[in-house]
Amino acid sequence: MVWLLAALGLVILLLAGDSLVKGAVNLSLRVGIPALIVSLTVVAFGTSAPELLISISAALENAPGIALGNVVGSNTANVLLVLGAPAMLAVMHTSQCNTRKSYVLMIGATLLFIAMAFRGVFDWISGVVLLLVLAGILFDSARDALAHRKAGDPDEDVEGADLEMPMWKILLFLGLGLIGLPVGADLLVDSAIEIARMFHVSETVIGLTLVAIGTSLPELATTVMAAIRRQADVALGNVIGSNMFNLLAIIGVASMIAPIPVERSFLQVDLWVMLGASLLLIPFVFLRQDLNKIWGIGLLALYGGYMFSILT
Image (cartoon, rainbow, N blue to C red; front, side, top):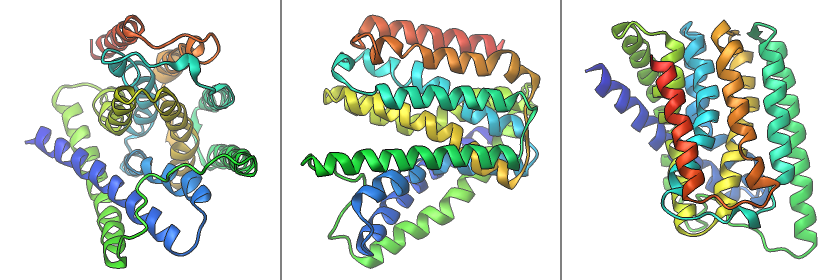
């Protein structure tokens, strides 16, 4: 029964997050907020809402291993699993992508996150620092996007935008999202804690595996579709952007609500695995390598080995 409740919580979270993005995007466009700003803020935060609610709920329920494991595990999964699996389906021509600046920012955010973890706790001070860095990155992204617009580049479509959506439907999406997210988060966190007790494993292990993989499913779905459509820039950008938001926004907000202690296992192993996985993107970002099936097998093998080491 507890597995069914965990699965139900995850499904509710994913559907509610998608619903919130659709409602928030269309409401923002309806009241006149520029599509550019909507893309950089509403969509980015909305797609991270499931992870955010899980981390907040776990922190409030005194399950910091799930809160932190969700973020660290998701970032590792985003590189090894989310990029590795689609590479088995189609070659992603990452050699043609220009993601150097975003990647450098992601590595910087990762190093900052690790440094702050060695304080022993993510508290309100950590939250302020992480959110200020996020604000700086968003400001820089907005400035770059405005420069592209002035140069005559076309605006990108905003995810979930439908200019003809009636107001009642917008409000319905918002309501479903705002109600579903906390319900799904509570279900998943409570079930994850119960599963940890059943199998006599730590909440950290459940956070790094079950919860992390579950909350990485939207990124996996997006990346698979991008690989099939030969959109390597979307696939790589999706992973880099998601990892930055996980570190800066999710832990930044969650630590402002409740302190998140850092277990020794994170400092000894998991944070360094996350950093190592992030550094594996160097060949695709700087060395003009394409993400092919051989790379995909390697990434999936590394992720399988990491999961095996955690569970055993």
